[in-house]
Image 1: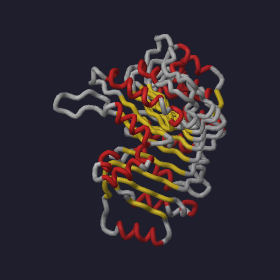
Image 2: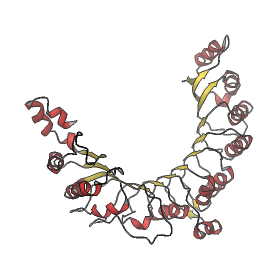
Image 3: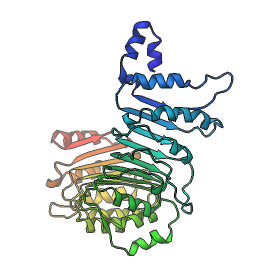
Image 4: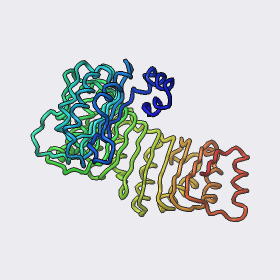
Amino acid sequence: MPFLLGSVSRRWRQLARSTPQLWSTVSFTRVTRRGKDEPAPPPLQIINDWLQLSCSLPLTFCVVEDPSCEFFGEICRPVIDALNQHSGRWHKVSLQLYKHYLPFFCGTSPPNNLHTLEIGQDEEWDCDETPTTYFRMNSTPSPTRLAIEALNLLELDVSWGNVTCLTLVGLPPHECILATRLAPLLECCTLFELDLPIDDYSSALRSKRSFKNTRLRTLRLHGTADLLDVFIEAVEFPALEELIYGEEIFLPAHGFISLFNRSGNCLKKLTLNLCEDSGEIAENLMELLEAIPSLEHLECVFPIRSSAMDSLFQKLSWSPPDSEFIPKLQSLTLCVYSSISVLGFMSCIFSWSHRKDLRLTVNTAGFRTEDGDLDEISQLVEKGYNIRLV
C-alpha cells in the first residue's frame, strides 16, 4: 500500500516516504519465488528501503513460511538478516516458521522495545525429542505478551519476568503449568488444543500440591476436557475474575468448582461456548452456576435452542430475591444460532425485583414471535428494563 500511494504522483511519493508510520509494519507472508508469468518477490533493496523509511519507530513485522515454496530458505534468510539489523526497534513480532529457521533471528542490538512475541510452527510437537534452544537472540528478549505454538518451552530463550499475557497452543498440560510458574506477573492466560498425549509426569500432577499464581485474572480454555482437567487440578488463581471456556462436548463443572473453591471463588465473568446439547451439559451448567454466587456477567453460546438454555431460563425465572442462584448477575448474553422465542421466560425473569437492573442481550438467527409479543417486549423496555435483541 505505501508503494501504491507513492506511485500516484511525485508529491504523493514524497509524502509517503516522509511518513514513517506507513512503513512501521512489515508482513512477509508470501516470501516465495514465483513462476515465469507471476510477479517476483520484492528484492532485498526494496525491503531494506522499507525498513529505513520507518526511521526509528517501533517495528511490527510478521514472517510466515510458505510450505509450497522449495526455495523458501534461500529467499527468507536475507529477509531475516535485514530484520536483524533493526532488532533494537522490534515491537511486535510474529514468526510462523519451521523451528530450524528460528536461530537466524538473533538480532544485532538488544530488543528493548519488544512488547509482543508470537512464535509457532506447523510441525507436530515431539515429546521424545531432546530439547534444543532454537530461538536465542544475542540479547534475551523480555516481552509483555507471549504466544507459543507447538514448541517446547526449553526451545525458546526468553525472559518471563515481564509476561502479563500468555497464549499456548498445542502444548501438553505440564508445559502449560510450567509456563504459569515462570511468569510471576501473568494476568491473562489462554490455552488452546491441549490434545497431545499425557506422559507419566503430567499424570502425576493430580496428586501434587496446587501451584498458586496470585495475579492471573483472565483464563481462556479451549481443548480436550480431560487434558484441561490435568491443568485445572494443578493450579490455584486467587485473583481469577474471568473464565472463558469453549468445548464442544463436555463441561468440566466439577473441575471448575474445585478450582474456584481453592482460589477463593471471586469469579465475576463467565463465557461458555456449548456447541452440543445434552442433559449432562444442562445439569453441569446448573451445578456450575449454583457454585458461583459472585458471578456478575454471564455469556453463553448455544448452537440451537437447547436443554441447557431452557434450564438456565427456568432457573432464573424461579429464583426469588433470597435465592443463591447467581444473585449478583448484572448482564446475561445469549448467542443462539437458530430461531427462538424467549418472551415467556423474559417476562418471568424480569418479574423479580432483584433482576430489574439485569442487562439482557439475545443474539440469534431469528425470533419466533406471535401476536402481541413485540408489544409486550416494548412494554418491558418502556418500564426501564434493559433488553437488546440482535
